[in-house]
Length: 107
Image (cartoon, rainbow, N blue to C red; front, side):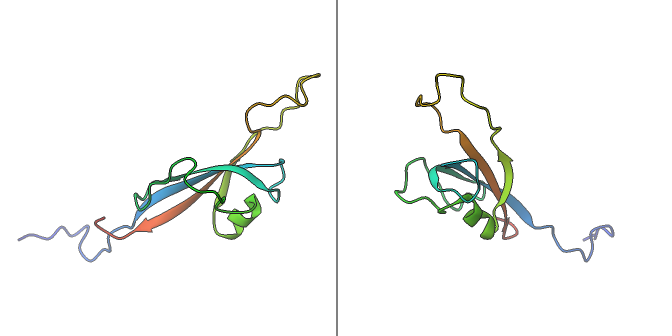
C-alpha cells in the first residue's frame, strides 16, 4: 500500500451545504412582521414545502439574523405606479437568508 505524501496526515475538509430561507415582510424594515415564507434545505435533512406550517419560522427578519441566518438579498424598493397604490399583487418585501450547515464527513 502506498501513501500519498501530499494528503498524509490531513483532516478531510468538512462537507458544507446551504439552507435558504425566503421571507416576505409586511414592510421593507427587517424588524417588521413576516407575512409569507419558503424554506429550502440543501443538507437533505428536511424537505420543507410551501404552506407546510401555519406559523412562520421567525416573527421578523431581525429574529432570523439573531438566530444566525445571513441576509444575502433584499428586494429593491420600487414605488407603485400612480393610481395603483392599493392594487393587490405580488408580495413586495422579499428577503433571502442563508445558513451554511456542516455535514458529517461521508454523508
